[in-house]
Length: 273
Image 1: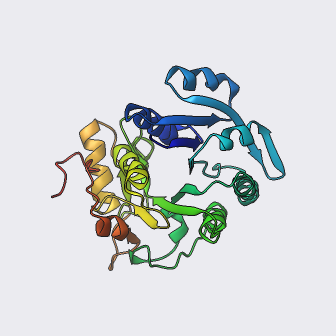
Image 2: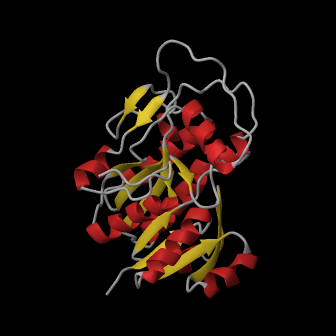
């Protein structure tokens, strides 16, 4: 019998993941912070729960949700314009609830932003050096689960997410004098994100740290100009290059060691062998 999967945060990634898990005969429970979305989740076969977590507690049905779950996928990133100071406290509240309910398996969806200002090749063995308040909060939140011996947790640090209706070039289009053209990109397609998360469950990849980034790292100036051209968008322009390569290339060494095969190249080409 398949495990019951709980997805805390059924946004762009979580909703797609829930639908794919259901297609593979998993029972899926999902949360939303918007009551109006409960019916949308239900229509897709997701058992819906209203859950809103704050720094000092939760509204809705967090405990009812957790008590039904065998494996929890935490998919609630910090909000961009606020919330960063409270984010760690919110995840701390969640972690305490997981302990109370004796939850044993957690997948924590994180971000390569925790590597911050590191330069060059970055792997799972690289020591993070977060810069932004949100990245610092995410790294701190990861440790709540990785340092808890009672929970088998796997952290997945995804690069920039792209998909059928989501691509950075749409907001870079037409921008002028961008200064980061010599930095490599670190992106991953939605379909590969889903395959990684489901593989953790099906292959029992527990107590691991995973970088979820496609193994192709062209420079931003080359990649985004080409992507704009393909879409008929106004091309972004970058300041002149300077000597020496900057930025970081985040490598998915853990996935490589596990034999994972990426299926959706970020440039729309055929998958690498």
